[in-house]
Image 1 (tube, one colour):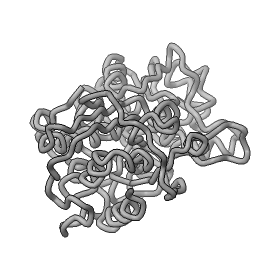
Image 2: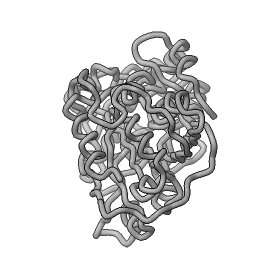
Image 3: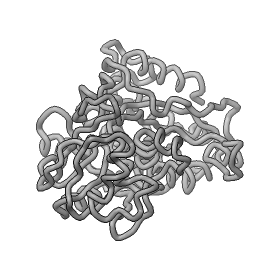
Length: 381
């Protein structure tokens, strides 16, 4: 479905604005073509702290500049992250407004499914991703995403487009105001399958160094499932150190009656809203859009400071659960589909990239935006 930016903006009306996940337009993808020789390697900075700054005020370095190019015909098919989908959808909506012969589809299946089921089997033009594509791991026999792309002749470039914080949320009825990484590991991590009450996690949380007093209250978790890049980012950032020390998998607890896993951010909001002592997490934009229906908790990343997520705390690096957002154009398809190249050109222009902040995300610094544009220009067919 299409989400109107005007409707979304008027619904929020302050500071950060978000639209619900999803996309719109025709679902017919262009025919796959032979990929050019340019290749790209996965980024190793998927969880780097965000840099400060805002998009450059200078004219765009990409073709199309600040104006929407016209006369573009064709279709662009996008699959992947429900977090990145609102940005890609808003860009496509703007682009289509000036190009009546341009159509698009923006899916929100989750980062992992976007890569594995669509992009890396040459089934989409762009992958939206809330983490970097997974590179080959010599320690496992599993075929990782970059290998799957290679096996299917899919060549790509990684383009960072924004930052997002991951907000830990609960019901407004819950008295809890702040949780630390130890609390979250004990409540939601790989050793928490038997935890049915908040207080059941107290012993492990205390052992890990927490001084939080967890309430004697039933626990109900609604959060992303393992097909989601949001899940991967949260598990890596929040659980990573504890999991390594304790020789545990870097994952959430097993889905059950206590933990309902969903790739749909709106379903997560509804699940957390519907239980008085709930727990979950979503991208910051979704949390801010639904503030009042859910309560956004402060998070202590281990330094003793409880920080509430906001655009400011994500940018200055004080909020500990933040990650970059990416798009991955299929270079082979771009060679045979002029609409794809034109869409990405506009996406990275001043007018296009402004959609990231308009729908609720944290913009790149001028330096990072310049690097993203250069990465695209170097390989653009």
